[in-house]
Structures are given as structure tokens and as C-alpha cells.
Image 1: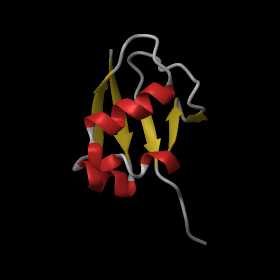
Image 2: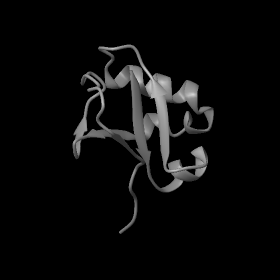
Image 3: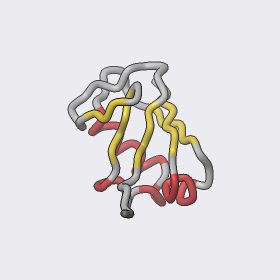
Image 4: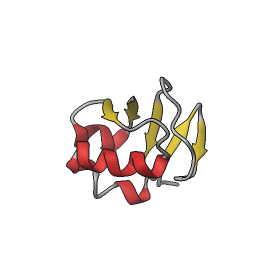
Length: 81
């Protein structure tokens, strides 16, 4: 299945766009998606350990299943005051 990731802030700059498509086997979890993103766009790999994934506007754990045909947000760490 093909997963569409929406990228924000510095992630968008590293990837050179606001979206990234990644191919995954059906039944994959978010942890597998994290690894697939690192392979598909090596420029994002250093940031991935501190990023969160959100599906349907909810943060999810690496053990969460990746649903087909649903955009997934890749959220970088937020800082500021």
C-alpha cells in the first residue's frame, strides 16, 4: 500500500516538499512506517527518533496499525515559550 505523509516545519524543508509517499506492506505498523520513511528520504532519518506520527488528528504509538488511504501527519518536536 502507498501511504501519504504530510510534513511540517523543518521536515518539509529537509524533504523538499510538504508530502512524501512511502510504500509499505499491508498490515504494517507505525514503527515499520518510521523505518520506511528513513529509507525513502534519508534526509529525514536524523529527525525521525524525535518525531511523532498522527493518524486522524491523534498521536499514535509505533505499535499502531497504518490504515490504508488515510493521510498521516509526521510532526517534528515543538519548542518555544
